[in-house]
Length: 500
Image 1 (cartoon, rainbow, N blue to C red):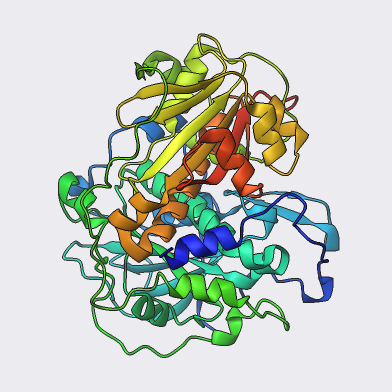
Image 2 (image 1 turned 60 degrees about the vertical axis):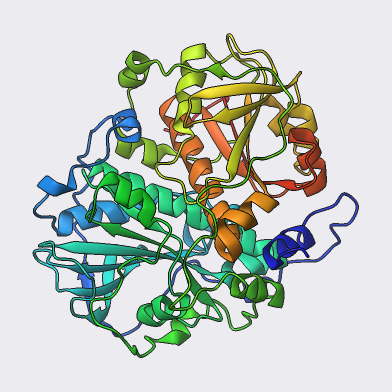
């Protein structure tokens, strides 16, 4: 029997000739900002961007030494929030104004919200806060120490999604985009914390009802999808294991009263499709659930192709890249103006090594890369094993045009040198992760896609995520296994002009 998450994914697949019509109801357009009224607020410091650590020093550097970190302050929290999920630029004016953010989003609908529970920070009262990015401030939702930590200070970041913001345009398929966008945001916050010298722990497994109640949201409209905590409470090995269990969220137990649940309404007509609520409900955990069924997935069928080849990471080239970490986040954009231009071996090697997670929520996720004109890299589809630093040629030839056709005939894609496809084999996912596996896989696909975005920006390349495609056609391009699907594609390559 097919599990509900696979059923949702395949029921929302796009098929050529069967996309249907439809229109956008502009009178029901969702707000892109969440607005709490009449609650205490704290202005975030403005002068936080004097941060010049090189981008690849952050990306490839060792995890932060939390043991020596005895304090953190409001300025560090502000850097985390503004760089992690802040407004980076504006285009247009008045009613036509559009505000870019530090993470990409499907259709620029930005379904995610960011909350922080903090304690022990100077100049900030212990409590739970919502990040009001439009006004660069915190809104205090609850007061008191809530986190289970013996450290002088502690913080937990909650990434949520408001379903209707995405379903207004993408209907039933929107749950995919909410998860991918949450993955973008999780990885961005994770990297910002790493730039602060902190090692965050990322959790996708928790008691959904308890966390949503703590946040005070209306769970029929907004839900928590991931939690990040700092400082690190254990050894690296313990930290990797703890990704599988519920995080230590609360210092004191509830019950908690809702906090302005009407603020979760993004439109007077904000009905969420039943398929989304059912798919999310099928992955929901209660207080006693949270274990995984296997320590590792069962072996996949043998992959045809050449023997694996080691890919070295040119350290001196990575160290010489000019963009700082903050600049890379600030300049990141989605590009579609690709040009046919060869990418040097040192650049693509750095880019490929950037596509790795430490640790992953979903070890069953695999990376395939369709590549074109790159130095010392024949055109083909490769399987990329980031942990081993090895690639394996699966199919020789240039498949970018086939990939572009499968991605709703978006012709600009065939000019991008690399198409990174994040794929999963469903039997492995179900066996290893159980019902929560779908969330973990989609979150990690978004996290990896975001790393492609940022590394491409730092290397002077463009990048663009693609979540809309003819699912079956794209699967056949990258893999013949009927039990495998592509979850997300992120393109990368030289472009005509970069945003400065």
